[in-house]
Amino acid sequence: MNNLALTDYLAQKNFPIVTKEYKKYLLYEGIQDHHVYILKSGVIKTSVISKDGREFNLEYINDLEVVSLLKDEYSQFIDAPFNIRVESAKAELYQIDRIEFWKDINQNFDLQIYVKNYYRERLMKSMKRTQQMLMNGKFGAVCTQIYDLYDKFGIEVHEGVLIDFVVTNEDIAHFCGINAASSVSRIMNQLKSCGAIKMHNRKILVKNIELIKDNIIF
Image 1 (cartoon, rainbow, N blue to C red):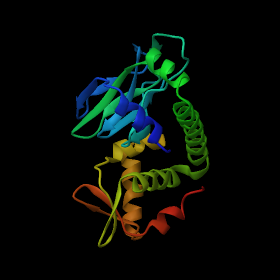
Image 2: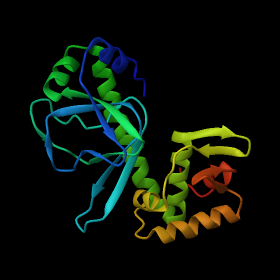
Image 3: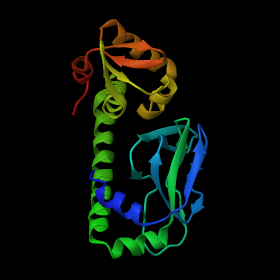
Image 4: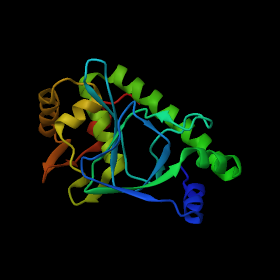
């Protein structure tokens, strides 16, 4: 997504910045709030809790991006649609009154385009993720998550591409709708055995991305 309009908008304003440390929550699903939050730096994770109490991870966000859905432009308070938790050492977020943000959007054509693209990409991501979860099975779902991490956090090193972010088997399980981290562990061992990945200082090193992609229905 082209964030130039959002970058310009933030540069023109003097919004307060909220700083949260590792594993601290910015929002809890269902709790009312009257702000829009935009990630300035760091990594956050969004998740929801199912009716039986299980956590389901939605995505990691590590770029300048709106991280709380905007919803309608008339309600001063809205229920947070998901949990937002900091996954890096700390994260900084712009805090904007949501009514003020909507007024600014309505007066700024470039921001309107940004918001339209924001919702369009959110919808496409949701549809793609649902398709991959339904069609790939557990093994394919884990491969899909590794591919997403590779795309978001990957840096080239001598042996391949290092996912420069520590992700536990439990977190991967929560992204894939898998009940037990042990199931993810078995799949990870299979990927190690076939030469697709290896572990390096608790991080995933992707040695052969094609072997990962072979197990994903795009």
